[in-house]
Length: 216
Image (tube, rainbow, N blue to C red):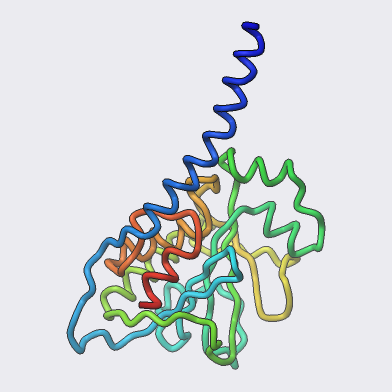
């Protein structure tokens, strides 16, 4: 009887954790921080895009500063660059069409796994992008945040992984930071907005909170 109680207690704990995580994520995703800046000085635009799970930040190339552009492989015809951050194993497995196993998912969720930055070029603005109007100061801070995420050599060069990509318009780079269920690809985007004083969620591991906030 004692063993049965212990087993039931363990099962309840295992079930309780993901439910608590999801409910907490849901509530905090819709709590907005950083007040809206009013006025006519918001003369720059960035964009948010999601593949249904994973958010990325898109910035027009003509608004990118030299520090962020330096060391990036580029196509001169591209007009926008997107920046996403995430679990290294997931990106590599996805780019090589290998299976991202259940073990990989557990490691990504519950261990501090290494990360990569995913940079993709676009020729035209996409219809599903969510536009955010920001100030020059906010844009500069956001670019510093993204640039600091790149892991660099001793000579401050960005480290591109030449054999990994989804196609002809994207590249992967070594990144700082570790991925886990509390620090996800969407948390990285949200933190960039928070540090740049752009409207953001209090905390969110998912994409829907930020999309909702900026679709208003």
